[in-house]
View 1 (cartoon, rainbow, N blue to C red):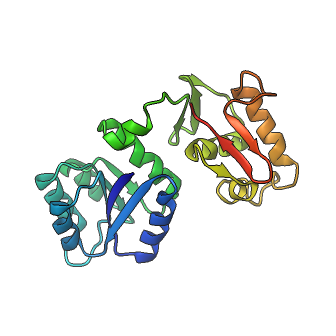
View 2: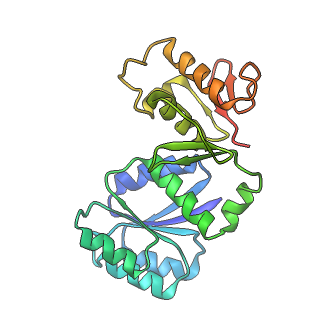
Length: 227
């Protein structure tokens, strides 16, 4: 279990992120007050800190400075501030990433694991003992298999990227449409998703008729295995 400390005074957003990350074996403890978070870091072991900048009682940049000074923990800044100065300052203070609001929770999940892999964190290393075949680059919207770029259409990328992020979980047809840009598109009909899945299998499977990675779970949806 990856343990995350979050400092976020928007409790609705904090709850959404907490529930979303839970399905990826990431446990979030949110602190509305920055002083409570700083106190908790002294007595609790967290793997990463997600930090808002606009907080009650103490500016997030000051919190960042205190955390870098006193604790050995990676930091992701999560902020609605659009001033480039804040981003530059946060990174100069020692933050490891800056994610401007609003953002897709899927991107936060990927960035968390990317940072923890870079820090050679045990929680991630244990889960990654088995070599991952597929790698997702959200910034470039690219997916590779064993280091080789997979040429995908926009629809195929939307489905496969979601599958890679939900590695090991069963995802229903409805979830795929609700969590991708396929919703309300020309692809949203009874047969189109099956066509997309078939095309993806043609590109990623050694034998599409006996899929090793993208499995159909009868009556439930699909499951992706990234190993």
